[in-house]
Image (cartoon, rainbow over all chains, first blue to last red; front, side, top):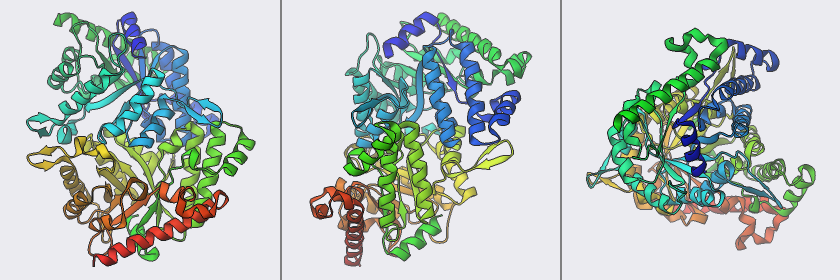
Length: 309
Length: 309
């Protein structure tokens, strides 16, 4: 799957992943109204609004981007109906040939991690039948529990040719509280990065490993160091746009081949119509606003990468 | 909710939580067969088998214990139908007046953590209506992202009188890989423990805080230290039984009031009928075997606590 991701990035010239993290207040009034008329002000109504909103965006940006990253929390908060909207979104993005990164940040031990891996990127057996329940292509994984929490995910990746992005240095302001602590002079996130590189060595695709890392755009200097520690790991970079990261901050996350990173934007794209810059589209044309925001983001990153050459 | 947990522990004399982590191979043949006859060898069939299995156990142990801890991964692996079985299990345990600890190990940043908290222990708003989607009483939380990943959970706890168990030192063999690293001579898990104590100070119930910690039974010496660092935090202790922890290892997790810890056993109870000791019950009477295992576990812990006096 890492090979497909690399190919699609080369084809679209856009190392961009659109974060499908639909808060209800991002969703235009007319979509919410229609969904509530059909299903009432219920969890099912919220789920329908989310699904219709996502579909509009995916239809308008799918030719421009290699991948999407639905944040499962935004669906899970609406219980079972919300998760049904997550499932529909994953399936629909696959129909559109997008790579789907499930931002699930799961992580547990042994058989429990194996169960998460099976449900999201693997296969479960029921009697004599096999199923691929959620069927994402990549998932994000939390490393706090150590190797035996991560290995079951890696095993599934190897069997199914799927991939991981392991949290190394997250984009939030207090990520340093534990991640930056120095251990014999080396910050914890670097130790985690070293492990990611090790784990990744055994799971190589054509040019990059199946095992990638999450490193926030908000920490470009750390990104530079981590890029050198994990030369073969793709870096998923959140924090662009709404969280404050700019194109110029991103160059250190890429390798000299112009690859090696994929930058996420969520709010900045899916709620673009709410920003002054794209307000002219209006809420009826929210998905066209998202398309314009994707084009602008691709240009920003391309120029930054050109400038760095 | 911490007050209810403490009361129920006092009433049952059993600081025990039964881990409802149903692997399909724990579920007796006759239950699987019936579920597959009705729903086929499908995700729905697996979910029905899990639900019927859980119901049998809950019916047979609910008067002996204060709490259950369904591990959501074991449900999530079967996709939407699996999560519906999780929901049914949570609801049924509430009908039986059990405290429900959702072992979800979620953790993200800002609005994303807020969404997980809303979905599992809080309230979501849809138009003018409010819902409590999954409705657990406690959830487990991963601290790797730092305060701004944890605080949204704490905010919801304060509003809803719910609680957390934050991962401090997990029970698995490689938990030390990151958690034991020394930072100025102090292991990371102690720093996390100190944070848990701080966070907990602002969220006190009558005698204990709403904000608890997870510390594995497999590390009793670390448990002793963490007990003193977090005197007002309840400790959820996994790793008893199948993972190797014994009653005698547990005394250090308790305070002098005989409270302050709740010990989880999953496989050791729900798959008791598969152990030599309880094989006489047979798979038809798996739930009676679980009841006998709960009684034995309560006795083991009580004797260990008496012996420590």
